[in-house]
Image (tube, rainbow, N blue to C red; front, side, top):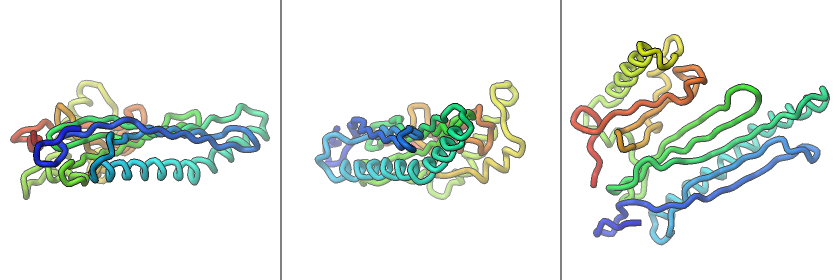
Length: 231
């Protein structure tokens, strides 16, 4: 964990903290959940402690979601399998993370959950967090663009251009009406910083079939893109 000489952190050191839980029906495991999220180390300043609390709460919220939403589905599937003498279902949920930028007073990462609830494709859900280590709070996406710029329009146009390029190359498939869905499903919280540029993404199923996972696009840093990073 480095200090920039003015008392503010320039980067953040973290280690994973993990949690696991198993739910059973009549002694039969029906749902398992595993969590791995970042924990700042050491927890000696208020910013690190705030970030630590944030991901502790995210861990608890995920496990509550598993117990309140996924468990009833797993229980019903298990009882149906027992009545039909069929194979028991295996429901599993995982939540993990990947740090994508760490420096210049900014710390960025993606957290992603994976839910396997049957024979179909696993459901992936991703969110991005970018922290200002001086202030100790997440940075809004608009802060990486000049004041008054139409940054949302710029990002949607870039995504549309990239979708068309991938279509021409036969590299991906997209849903009918993806242009409208692109605007409708855009969420300014779904972004993270990377070495290549500002990456923003769309929910699974929103603009493409599940085989495409979570569609992601990257806007390079610079005059025509996002603002250059500090540091």
